[in-house]
Structures are given as structure tokens and as C-alpha cells.
Image 1 (cartoon, helix red, strand yellow):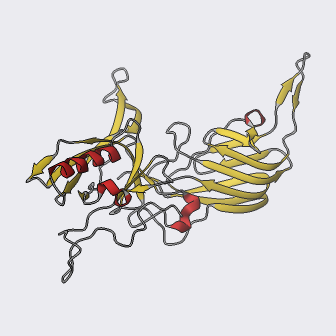
Image 2 (cartoon, rainbow, N blue to C red):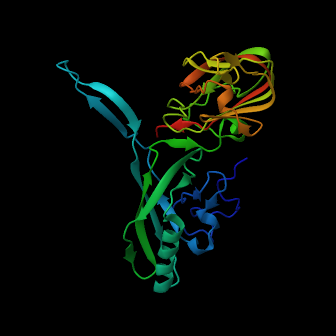
Length: 319
């Protein structure tokens, strides 16, 4: 299971009647950051950020769709050429009011800036919507100081992808990568299948968008671990995508074409658009097809393969 937030048992929280060790009037939002989406650091686990709190997390974010159009001759209107989700900004409020003195107040702001600002984008996740992460760059606004023990500031995160991504992937499903409002079905979907020679099955894409590793750059790994007698074929009947592994075609000096052997035993992997067999390139052995996943159900057929098939991909959401 991917551990995103702090494991502390004494996380900062609001005052309860009769308590003396909790002075906050609200429950602060915990946020964690990660460079790779796997190893996370919580703001609650940074010693220099004790008493620095996130008071307001992002609201539900609207998708920022960018479309390109073209007028064709004298036809009415214009035609859509391309459409993509553009980057977007959202604002978060931080504050502190428990500094020891003025220098300590300044150090608190400096520590927050050091925690959030850098030259490279990273993933951020908020505890009020814990199944989603955003790929961001951060910019701190000028702090507003009050007395000599506190300040508040707004942090603007630029979401570079314009979509939120699931914590974990389809293979982490048992570890609660989804949550309320994230297209979770009543019945647990399956992302691993065993077939013998030929198989038909359905893969559920719970994203709000088409999973497209070629044009959109989405992570997608399809693994076939087993054996094939040759001419393996993978087809997504819903999208019309196919990959055919027929072996290398060679032509001799007399222009005679020979089809190479296409049987194998091992682990065949489609990672995005690149294919490998036992870690070595398999590009020349197949027709270099691409597999995408339409929203919701995708009906697959695999021929001439015996073994285990797994689909490993994250889910993408508009908000």
C-alpha cells in the first residue's frame, strides 16, 4: 500500500471541549508532496513546519479545455482540429499564529517556501480528497503578518497536466486507490486474467478520459507472462486497436520475403508504445500497434497466448 500521509497519532486538529493541548479552532488540511508519486512527505512530518497549517484546500477544480478550430472553405462554422486539457491554477491558504517571536515567524514562512517551491514539478495530495494527486509547481504569495507571532499567505499551485491522477494504479485496487465520486463501481473490477490459447475479457477504465499512451502520454503497461505458439494477437474490440506479433519479415537479394518465427516463452510487455520480451526490445517482431482504453468498459480478445495477462494504469479525472 502506498503511504501518502503521516502515520502520527497526534496530528494537529481542532480544540475539543475540556482539552488543553489543542488550541486550533479548525481541523487543518494535511498535504503531502512526492517526486515520483510513490514516496511521500507530509507537512506534518517536517519539524520546521510545526504550527504551520493549511487552512483552506483547493475547491473542486473545473477542467480547462483548450480547442483548436479551422474554417473550411465557405462551410458554415468551423471544424474542431484538436482538443486537450490545459494547465490550471488553484489556490491554497496557509497560516501560523503560534510562533515564539518575530524571527521564529519569519523562519516558519521560509520553511514553507522551502517545502513547496522548487525548479522541478512534483505531485501534491490533500487529505480532504486523498485519492487524487496533482502534478504541480508552486508559487507563494507575499505573507500578511499580524502582531509578531503570525502570518497568512496564499500559495498558487499550477496543475501542469490539467487532470488529477489516482494514487496508485489499477493493480493497487485493493489498497483503496479510489474513493467517493471517483467512478468506483459496485462490483470490484478485474485487471488480471488467465487465458489458455484464446481469451475474451472486459477491462474497466474508470477515468473521465480515454487512456492514450501514444498521443496523450498516459502511463499504460500491458504484461503477458507465458507462452505463444506464434502469431499472437491483442485486440481491443471497443476502440479497434490491435497489436499483431508475427515475427521479423526479411527480404533476400531475390526479393523473396520470409516471415520469421513468432513463438515465444517469457514475459512480453507493452509499456506505453514500447514492446519488450524478457527486457529486450521486441519492436521488430510486431506491427507496432498501440492500445488505448476508452472510458468505461473495453472488450478485449487475445489469440495464440497461454498465461497471465495484467493491465497496469492509473486513472485520470477532470476535477
